[in-house]
Image 1 (cartoon, rainbow, N blue to C red):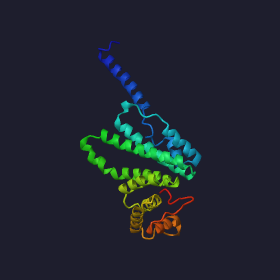
Image 2 (cartoon, one colour):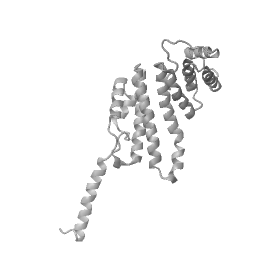
Image 3 (cartoon, rainbow, N blue to C red):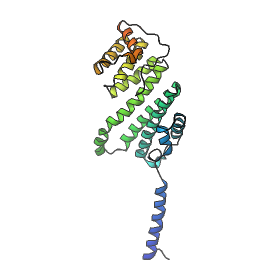
Length: 240
């Protein structure tokens, strides 16, 4: 049938539409689907299966460039959360070095998400994006805290300090982060910063230093007169 006839043009449109529909149906954004089995296992599975699922997600290739910056930002956010879950699972297994690597990967991916989101947003939509900042900051603060906590567990006190300080720039009412910063600063020999951090902890949560937080209370006391407490197995706080 010649395509210049009306029936021929209709047939051509229908064929082209079917091809386009099939192509679109075959496309999906990695990590963005709620029915992703690995995502469910990463979050809810038993620890060995959860770790393996999280690692599979993080090993996936990045979306092609033609997906555009918005799609890339969605993938980065989803994988940043995956890396945070992985950090938690590894920490629960006392695999602190690996947990630190996962937490740092989470921070990196959140920062990529932030850059890609701004790049893909039209100026008139940036007010709406700004309104989502609180949620983004909460996620980033969790990742920074996970990194700071693992650095403390590895006794890399000075390296922990900037991560914990960033947590507190994002969420100044985070009592556990203030107390953990106090531990890191004390063990680094910065007793003035330690005392300010502990005082801020008590302003937010006056009953913070209880028997349940014995190590942190001991460090709080040593900071008063500029002493460093030797710790054999420091575990100043649990990941929130």
